[in-house]
Each structure stands twice: as structure tokens, then as C-alpha cells.
Image 1: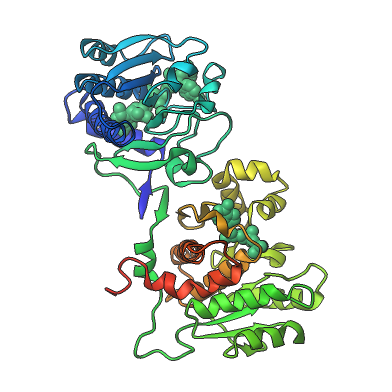
Image 2: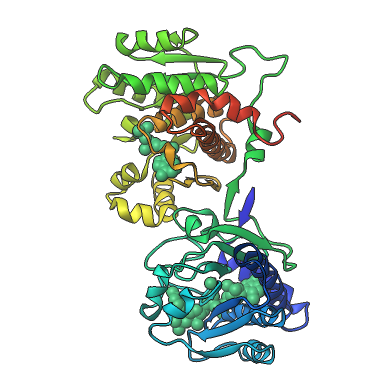
Length: 479
Ligand SMILES: NC(=O)C1=CN([C@@H]2O[C@H](COP(=O)(O)OP(=O)(O)OC[C@H]3O[C@@H](n4cnc5c(N)ncnc54)[C@H](OP(=O)(O)O)[C@@H]3O)[C@@H](O)[C@H]2O)[C@@H](O)CC1
Ligand SMILES: Nc1ncnc2c1ncn2[C@@H]1O[C@H](COP(=O)(O)OP(=O)(O)O)[C@@H](O)[C@H]1O
Ligand SMILES: [K+]
């Protein structure tokens, strides 16, 4: 897991650390890590540090202080550094140190985007965790600067550290160097893509509280994914019931069932009309048709709002209280739910649940997913490039390959997640449910990466790549 902490927690922890250290120690540590990272970038992109041109954008806060101290270090290594001051006042001591090292500084002027574009490296210290809203109007043009490698100090200016919300222009980075711990902005969509590569520099912050947001890594999935034990039988491994498809959308039934089987369910039951039942059985002869006892349900892929029979099956399944994936057609008319129910909307479906705009959900997925979690009591998995799970924990899966934006990919995710839920030791542990949801999303993305290695993928390819995605997880063999 990569842990991220809120601004409030970081400031509290920083204050405790600073009280025990000489003044300025944390900022010097941050600047040292920044300078090393910038030198690495310069070596890679411009062949060295000595003589290379660096433009540093420095704002009024400590983010600007970090940037100016890093500027001084780069100047001492021979870089030609110009600091453009984006505020009337900047960190005095840091500016004095930069001047002593040979950094030239002047206030930001209209048109300085051209100066930035001509640099080998642009270091963004306009605003960090104290930033609010998108870039101020005077700096909006920076979002279009193309040319230099861009390194963000702590986070790209224009982003909100706690939510990752994109509410205006942002200076996107190739590399973000953050300090002590990641912040939610680094792990959440759509902000994570604007951060570029993430480097968490150790500045000696200890005793951080529980993370606010965590990114689930492939090794976490390997450690948690249920594998058969010698004592298992097909029932104890977990039976998945699938209520999906109908006479109109037959493919969703096949895709969800395929994925549940390939993710390692002990048994899959399919509940639906004769057509597509016969298609499902043809695709997966091991599937049992008709209702029965299950450990978890997959409800709704390809279920039409005009299909009273399938909708009755969905309602009946939800009444039983078992864990369930509540997807697509099952997202309408939600009954009372609990944390063992995982809603799996995409941004458009989540917007409908809230009566909000899809674009608002896409700009700030965490806030909107959290609202649905609070209103329904269910665990929410909001699909997207970065998938966000909000339940007893807030978890994300790193960006999946964009090839996954293909019809039926969501049905495959629903099937994988059904198997993860059916394998839970304690299905009424809300944290385990949230982890299962995020694990399924990570596995789905990994299967998509394998399936797209040779070109465009189809959703069925993703289901078929799930076994290889599992066995390629780091640490899978060791367990
Ligand atoms: N905490 C830690 O552990 C450590 C913290 N450290 C560092 O301290 C940083 C936090 O410093 P901080 O609190 O001084 O705030 P900071 O991010 O510089 O922002 C305030 C300034 O930004 C400006 N501004 C705001 N929004 C803007 C926008 N959209 N567009 C443009 N400008 C905008 C705002 O000016 P305004 O325009 O609002 O007048 C104000 O002047 C943190 O990110 C890290 O780098 C490290 O040194 C060591 C360990
Ligand atoms: N641009 C993208 N990059 C990566 N993954 C994506 C992208 N767009 C969608 N996805 C993923 O693809 C899947 C699409 O699901 P969904 O929208 O329900 O499609 P469908 O209903 O056709 O099955 C989700 O898992 C989502 O996270
Ligand atoms: K910044």
C-alpha cells in the first residue's frame, strides 16, 4: 500500500517533528531531496546538471521556500538557475541562500511562460499543501507550457491536496517530489495523472496517524487473494451467484460469469432466463444454472430496467444480506444496503445516483463517491482510469491501461469482484470488503495490461487474462 495523509494530519505531525529539531531542518531535508531528484531528471533529460538551465517558480509559502533552497543547491552544482517570484513576498532566508549560490531572481512578469518553456527544467514551488483552487489567473498560461521537464514541489500547483479535485488550470508535472508521506492528491483520479511519477522523500516524519487514502499495490493483492487450501471443497472456496443479462443484453451474462470463474470461484451459479442461460453454459460448461445458496452475488450487469423478472431476482438477492456487487441495472431503486454491498458505478451512473453532473464527478471523484457511501451505507467502487473505493477505508487502484475503456470491461470487473467477495473469511468485516473491491480493480487493470500487450483488447480477453494476472503478481509464488 502507498499511504496518503490529509493536510491537517501532515501539519500536526510536522509541528511535532519541528519542535524537536533546529529551525529549518525539515525544509532543508525537503530541499535536499528535491535537488537530488532534479539533478537525476536533468541528467536523464538534458545529459547533466552543470550549465543546464533551470527556472524555479517560487510562491509566498513554504512550498516556495523548498523550491528556492533546492535552487541554491542546483546552482552550487553548476546549473544556471533563475527564480521567478510568483508572490510579493517569498521565504526571506531561502531567497537569500539562493542569491548567495548565484541564483538570479525577479518577480514574475506577463509572458514569462516563454522563459519557462525555454528551460531544461521547471521547478514548481508556487503552492503546495496550502494551495486553494486552480492556478491564479496570472499563472494560468503555465498549464500550456511545453518543453521543459517539470518537477512539482510536493504537488502540482492548482490541485487540492486533500481531494485531488481539479477545479481550474494546473501546472502538470513529469515528477512530483513529496515529503514524509503521500497526500490524497497523489493517489486519486484525475489528479494522479497530473502529478506524473511520484517520489516520497523521507524527511524524518514519524508517528503519522492512519492513512486517509491508500493505493493498493499488486503485492497487496497477492497477499490477500483467496487461494484454495487442501481442506477446501468447491463450496468452502466460495460460490458466486450471478444475476446478469437478459434477452436483450446476453453478453454481460457471459462476461461476468467468465470473469468470476477465471478469478477462482469454487462454483458459479447463473440466474436468468433460458436465453442467455444456454449461452452462458456454452461458454462455461462448469456453471450451474438457477438460484441456490451463494457466498456472494454479482447483480445487474446487462440487466435492463424493463426486465421485471431479472429485477425481481436482484431484489431477492439483496434481501438475503450476502455480500454483493451492485452494478449497472441493479443501481436503480436501491433498497437499504450495508457495507457488504459494493456499488460499482462509472462516473455517469454515480452522477445519476446523486442527481449531479457527470463532469463534476469526473473532476472530484472522491468527494462524490464519499457522498454516495454516506447516503447509502454501501461500499462504493467508482470506476475510472483510476478506480476509487470508498467504504470503511478509502482505497485506489493505479491508472489502468486506457485500452480498458471498451464495452463489457465493467461486466468483467463485476465478475472478478464477485469472486473476491465470495472468498472473504469474514464477509461482514467492512474493511475486508473495501480491500476486496480495490484488489479486484487492481487485478482487472493488470489483466487488461496483459491482454493489451499485443494490441487492442476485447472485454473477454481481460477475463481470460485474469489467471496470468494473478500468477504474475509480485509475491504470488511465495505464498
Ligand atoms: N508540512 C510539512 O511536513 C512540510 C512542508 N513543507 C513545505 O511547505 C508547504 C506548505 O507551505 P505553506 O503552508 O506555506 O503553503 P503553500 O503550499 O506554500 O501555499 C501557500 C501559498 O500559495 C499561494 N497559492 C495558494 N493557492 C494557489 C494557487 N491556486 N495558485 C497560485 N498560488 C497559490 C498562496 O498565495 P495567494 O495567492 O493565496 O495569496 C500562498 O502564498 C508544503 O507543500 C511543502 O512544500 C516542507 O518544507 C517540509 C515539510
Ligand atoms: N480511460 C480509461 N483508462 C483505464 N481504465 C478505464 C478507462 N475508462 C474506463 N476504464 C475502466 O474500464 C471499465 C469500464 O467499465 P464500464 O464503464 O462499466 O463499462 P461497461 O458497462 O461497458 O462494461 C471500468 O473498470 C473502468 O475503470
Ligand atoms: K507546487
